[in-house]
Image (cartoon, rainbow, N blue to C red; front, side, top):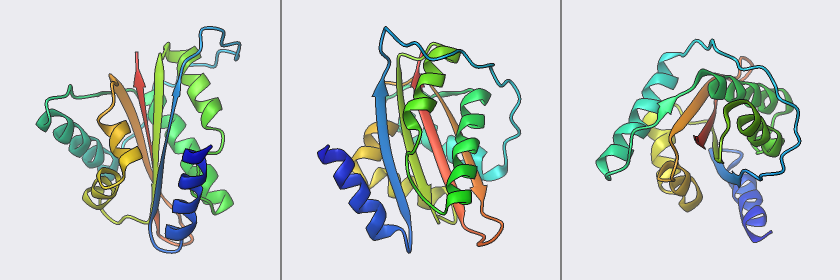
Length: 168
């Protein structure tokens, strides 16, 4: 509860300028969520490719494995970005559903999520995530794969980032 309260306060303070938050979940062995179809195709934009490259460069620089990208994860990230844009929020609403989807469709054992808002460059978003203990913990976490979506709000021109990490 303390982590949720802290995260919500952080979002409220930074929402007007820049915002980001982190969340994680462990897969439970009694998951009863319905299996969804694997999304195989996702077209990456330059910002997404650069952000993933920077995350992997950072991980390798501190002795961790580079993460493999999975299109299905990026598709789920994009769905969340569209939700945040449509609702003018930066949050982890429905993270449990996304995590359950990763468990049922991909067989994920662990899932983490970072979101960010209003960072103009991949470098700025990564720097903000690394300056935040929760985000940094996800980036440095025991994960094997990831996906990422960066979506620009057509009304404001601001970028929404959702980055999901999984351990298969």
